[in-house]
Image 1 (cartoon, helix red, strand yellow):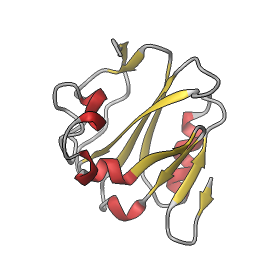
Image 2 (cartoon, rainbow, N blue to C red):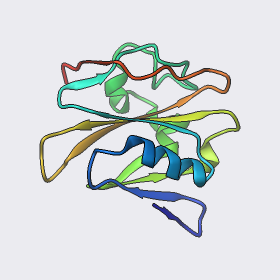
Image 3 (cartoon, rainbow, N blue to C red):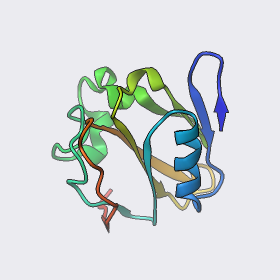
Image 4 (spheres, helix red, strand yellow):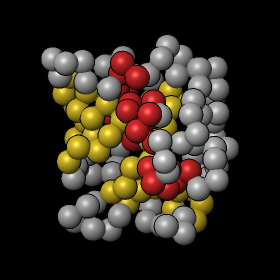
Length: 137
């Protein structure tokens, strides 16, 4: 993980095997996070937390990036995939008490090894543990 001069954090993910290590690294950088690594064709079951914007908790939130207006949502701005193995985290979009929720799904593809679901949990909204569920997408 790299803390950049502009305040962003770049996290490289070469293997999906230490979610607690990534969570601890983010916490050391000042970002409270919940990190889950999931098997192919799974996602965390819904209703784990209360989201700060419509990107989580609405019908079809796993495809939220396709929805109109997503670029304005803070969840979208807080964490973005920048490379096949890297994400960029922008703490300026994470307010005090909020949790960055990251769900990495094994994509079974060496060219694109994982898919990322990233959301912000509202301050005061506890994030329940991930319960893997079948994902149709």
